[in-house]
Image 1 (cartoon, rainbow, N blue to C red):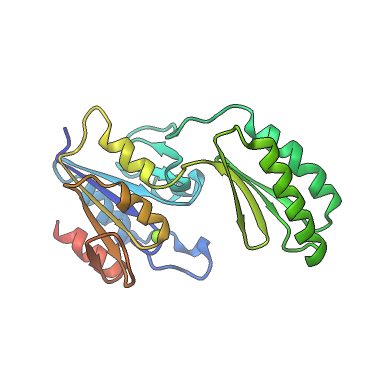
Image 2 (image 1 turned 90 degrees about the horizontal axis):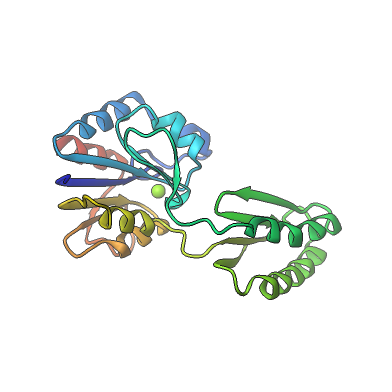
Length: 236
Ligand SMILES: [Mg+2]
């Protein structure tokens, strides 16, 4: 049994939010710090991020820590090389959804499909705005009619319609850790934005949530910024 599990969000928690995501790569100080904390006796470090697997692997893959990508959808346990999906992947839903999206993409110049493991997104930002909006309404109705019985969620955003697996969020990681064969005796989770609130919401009563930055949060503790997070990690 590990006495302490430490769950750390990446962007905005361990590094400042950058204008473009690519320049948020970890600096040497951060890599040394995470390595140091990971070697602390009885401590397991988890980094949990919305970023895809390849980015986390490139940046943090050499450290003795666990990694969670796509908001907890993918899990790479400490010391493992393989990623496993933290929730079950229903079979065939991508094909069903793509079969619906494709004719809309063909009929709507400027629109495109973005594929991730746990979601398919139809973007129409570059389409004619009136026609695009009409197509989006039609598409949404078509999706709702076709997918009602599937474990999927249809979400509408700014010039996007996204179909994703229902219930994929950072709370999954907490549930996974708490229900594992060797649950930690103490659990501390740190994060800075809305997606981290799912993590705080899933924390068991004895766990500690730390919100990074100002603003309302479910977490009962806070640290000012990534620099403060690093100082706190150093003091552990
Ligand atoms: Mg963040």
